[in-house]
Image (cartoon, rainbow, N blue to C red; front, side, top):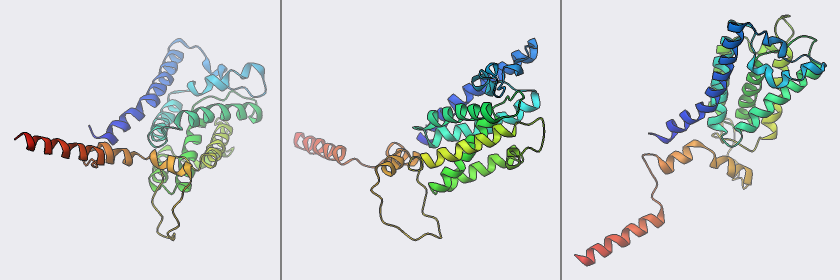
Length: 245
């Protein structure tokens, strides 16, 4: 199997497992009428602190969970594909930071759903794509935002039954993380309006370049590069066989 395709399948594993858990919780809640929505984030109340952990797994209805499923799976898969050394850290920070800020600043109501994390991942991939000059990440984020609907408007208090606080603080967290990890991740091509610059000796840039999937593909894919030591060893073996003949 092509190394890039194999890596893509591996990147889907953890997001798929999380999404499966979200759906299982929703099915059990709907079937048994458990009322798990009351375990969501309830701002500035002690019993609402549990929602920081539980709220992303709780949804208010079938439309809510369906609307969140595809964006969450797509964005988290892209996160694990392009940022495999940062993915767990970024996902965890988006998870906890968004929940904590909603608990501190949110309206006195129950906030549930994974949409805050979705906004965090989308803004991280988009802003990081611009910083890293990676047009693929920018295009993917635009595509998901388009499919998700009026994503930008979700950060404004336009509808009472939508937690714009989760959306806003998720987006803010993603932007901050993109700048914090601005030297980590895939390095894109020089954009057409930019002048060529000097080579960077930044160690973080070197590490980021090493993370790029196509570097791995060039070594392990169909068109493998000849490694000097291997080529030399093969030459010696051939010479020895000629001597034997």
